[in-house]
Amino acid sequence: MGSILATVGAMIAGGAVATVTVVGLVSSQTSTDGPSPANVNAPVVQYGSNG
Amino acid sequence: MRVAGETRGLTAVLAAHAPWLLAIAWSVLLLGPALAPGFVLSYDMVWVPDLAVRPDVWGLGTSLPRAVPSDAVVALLDDVVPGMWLQKLVLLGSLAAGGIGAAGLVGDRALVARLAAVTLWIWNPLVVERLVLGQWPVLVGYGVLPWVLLAGRRWRASGRLPVRLGWLVPLGSLSVSTGLVTCLALLAVTGRRRALPAAGLLLAGQAPWLVAGLLHAGDATSAASGAQVFALRGEGLLPAPLAALGLGGVWNAEVVPASREGLVAAVSLCVLAGLCAVGVRSALARVPRHDHWALFACWAVGFGLAVAGWALPGAVGWLAAHVPGGGTLRDGSRLLVLCAPLLVVLVAHGTDVAVTRLRATAAGAAVVSLGVAAVLWPVAVMPDAALGASGRLTAVEYPSAYADLRRVVRDDAPPGDVLVLPLTSYRQPEWNDDHKVLDPTPRVVTRDAVGSDALVVSGVRLPGEDPRVLDAAAALTLSTPGERSAALVRLGFGVVVVDDDRPAAPSVAGTPLLDADGLRAVALDGAEPASAPWWWTALLAVAWAAYAALPSGAIVLGVLRSRRSEADTGS
Image (tube, rainbow over all chains, first blue to last red; front, side, top):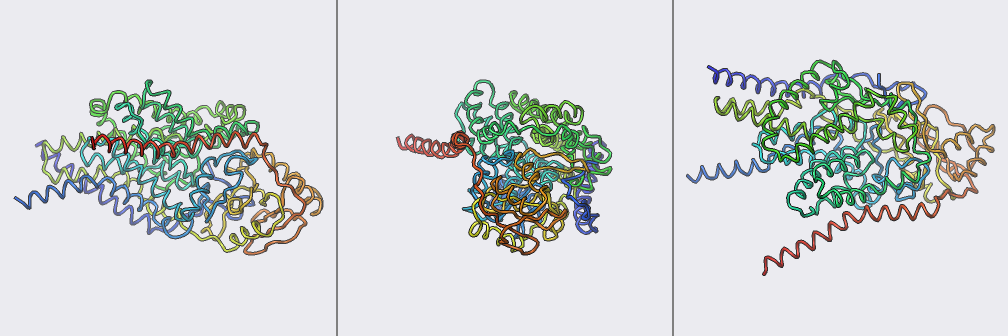
């Protein structure tokens, strides 16, 4: 019983991670860009934001 | 029978080469468009076609020598390999070499464990965030780190100095923080018996920044408020210390992948912690005893210093403001590099244990499936790191005006250094896809150049340390262009370059040299270039000789050993 559960669990884990990886890679590269982190109208270009 | 033998042979070959193939594959996927022709210019990462070998790259300028020795190494190497390709070689090489080295840290474990080590070493928040922030010397040091640990381990075991340390130490010491990481890692892994020769080796590797830093000690303190500004930062649901446990927590929210700001980052930390927990017993049983302490010491120092800036910003700020060089600790999350080896070793052992247990009870397909999950999970929880952090890292060409600027400053300008205006550190040019970058102009020109070293973070201004910038700023407040020019000439400036960026720079009187694509250069006659005292040059020459002696010595030692080995074989 334990071995069947382990087999099923491992298959699900592997399948899920592989699927999430492929879908994540594709969708993260095809989604629209977020807003630029910097305000181009600011008088001084800031090094960054820690907010 | 023969077919079975061939299959076994093919499997063995694949197993032997899979870690480095995977390391290269992940590195290429991570960098993506950054590997296209052109320069990757992102925050602190400024590469130019040909960085000139000039006094300030050796540490003889008036600004704090933050880019010593990295700039000098690049200035020399880009005479051999064009700057554009050298940059790609450095980025790709650092990531891939680090991944292969990480597999070597668990070289006695099953293939799946070594592959899991490769993925985690390359695909984690530390790498992505520091890559976008442009801190390439940190990444070079990170790529060298597992090899330093392996070489140190070998030195301890054999008693014979590994030749490769002559290359690894200088490469792992391209910046102050990276040098400190290399020092701690090597001293921790070699043990007390080799501490003295290891310290000598490390001292030679750190000599350029150490001596240059001491020569600038009078200006080497920085604003106390920087500790708060650059402190570890929470990511999404994770408070700062938990983010740091998973190698995240960089101070700059702009460089954090979106996937780190959601629930997935917490899931990622749970998986990491789970695999580490599963792997502890195996690691304790199989990793050499001394290495337990070395890996743990590295982790504890890295995590402790990263968290210190968050937990005790007042104390770290005091150090930065009062102790020369103390500012190194203000962006303590850079030192999380030290945490990576222990995490990777534990995760690899955890993977090994899980797969071994499953192999005993479950079908082969299930074992393969779990192995796939163990190797892929770092990518699954941070897919937006791919392809140059989803397009944040792109390769661009410099406008032709920069080449013109370099030419006129080299050929047509009167003597004197270059002042770059406006006095703001960062630019966000359209030609760089509106990505932020440290002003590239000072690196483009062939003479020592002075630009602002003040920083603005979330509206908080952190003053710079270069006294010459303050003098130039004071000169620019004079009422007429002629008076400004005269004052700048007295400060040793022979050229003023104005980048037509916001805010507008005060005008100066002089002879126009260039006006193209938003870059203007004006020549100021009568300046005498500022030069460092002779004894600075002498001390730095000794420091650089010590640094250069490491790779040179490695070559000589390698040849001698090779000849001795041949002679022994012959006899």
